[in-house]
Length: 113
Length: 112
Image (cartoon, rainbow over the protein chains, first blue to last red):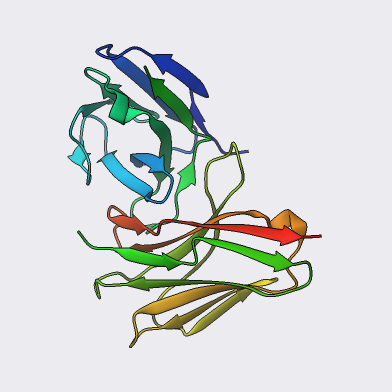
């Protein structure tokens, strides 16, 4: 069964902490994505990567960075967590050209206090 | 920012009824329109998708209707079941799949 695995289901962090969210996929997908999901706003793209060490900003990259050192792993980093980053974070992956056909992880619910 | 507008925000349907969710997009460069289904505690899962060269696609009880001239598409769930209760997202994407814009979601509740 193909999978996108996010390392944590729930996280509580303090304001100003550096936070790492990890995502691993076992489908040999080139593309990987980080979205945040907020009620009434749908899914908003933070960053995506189309190859190892490559990254592109999405629609809301401010306050975030990413790292992709291996094909299967894509990390989202909150440099200095703030309360407005409290959200559900979803990782996804896909083959190139497979437009919109994403496989999502189960999400990480992050609370910043 | 390009948008995909989805309505209604929530929907309550009787078991056996038809659930209809509507979406409208702006960017004519979009050429792939998927629908995702999300259950509580899970990530969204691809349900059904359509390309603009067809006006309708059916998979089991789920049908997408697509109106290219109006830039609108909709999901119909026939014979709705309590197990269909979930949040549904429409989306619009370009061929490369890098720019997928999601609707805000519709929370569907099917009464037994």
